[in-house]
Image 1 (tube, helix red, strand yellow):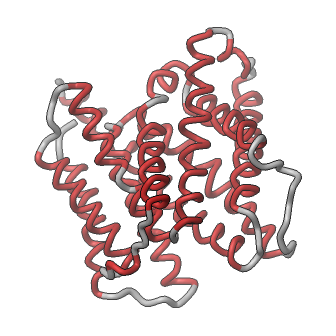
Image 2 (cartoon, one colour):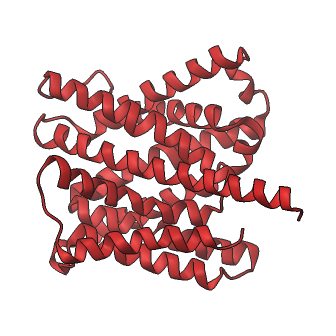
Length: 304
């Protein structure tokens, strides 16, 4: 590899890392807004999922149509591609969000987040079996640090904060598998069609399928300036932008790396709680934050 190629490769990796971290951070912002809607506004998680997918997907496809002036429906001309989009919309976009909310229903947000964050481990095991090659010691170390860091931030080190029943464990594992699928499955169509079309159609398909579970017009909740603002935050800042960023990141960096960097989601939520809600960090939360930051340093200093 020449010096110019090496510089370009390093630039792309940094770009991929920034995109993945930014996506996770914005999902953390979305989590705070969604929590307000559920607890203070009386909104339904099912309604929020279906509306955020349909509206965010429509926005992204409309922007793509105007920007490229190409027919956005051309992705369905190839049967193999069309099938891949449908599978991604159902098994990726919809499943990763719905199973997470169902896990919360049977336990709590802390337990659901920890279980879903088993996805880097699932991705690593899949790649070991699929590629028949073990990850580097640095990747293993990054996964361990990210898992411990996430646990410390969410539970403050208190094992009692985790509530695992049979239903919780079932839906939590499904949630982790869905998150892994959301990272691994769309890589082929991403390379062919780009992140705008993949993310946009994934949201629309997921939203349409979710409509059979919950009618988007079946609304209940308190309408106020704060609740409307929170819905806009969830749709634009918490769905439209981060899903596009994440799709871009997995075109550039490894699936394991993008998934590990998802640890910035609970970290950003914790920091926002510290800034806006005045909730102070415990020693273990600070340790967890340092561990998550260390994962980025470890991954960014290793070769592709």
